[in-house]
Amino acid sequence: MTSARHDFLALAGSVPDLLRDPAVGAAWPGPSALAGFTVGGLAGHLAYQVLSIPPTLAAPVPSEPVVPLLGHYERVEWIGAGPEEEINVRIRQGGESEAAEGAGALADRVAAAVAELTGTLASAENRPVRIPLWGPWSLLLDDFLTTRMMEIAVHGDDLAVSAGIATPRFAPSAVDTVVDLLSRLSVRRHGPTAVLRALSRAERAPFTIAAF
Image 1 (tube, one colour):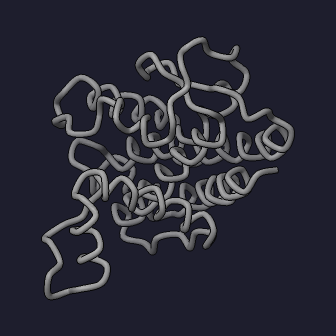
Image 2 (image 1 turned 180 degrees about the vertical axis):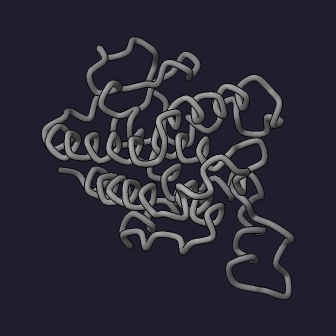
């Protein structure tokens, strides 16, 4: 199994425990740290990053051209989109739909998906895959899993903050993968000088080097 798959499974395995935290269930109907999301909707969006993988692997190999990892982020509609634009409305609605049965049921579904993927990812070919809401492109499986790792780590932190609990302690190698991706996206957005200064020179650091 590739390192990307080990790291994905490690991160995915943290999601059911987070969803089962009593503080998450207690905060479920209230607003989250992300504008427009309830805590439950945010939890549903987090869970989708795992739940989407089994049907993606079961789908036929897509005919859409394969793009590199960073090429994916040059094409997604949500980067730079306003909160009320269609893509973000769809994302929030999808999260609420996933969360409809509550925290416990959602945690059970994610745990079952992680158990299934522990077997299927071990032998899956590194072939093109895609999610239907994308535009006309696909990613190789390991690159796709890297995008899901970033989503799990970032939204895992969002959910923990929303519920007033500690962010999960993610596996170090998975964090390395996510930070590498976010750093590359930050360089693309802000340029190398800004990122170098932010990481090495506090007196010359820009206001932000946020990747998105």
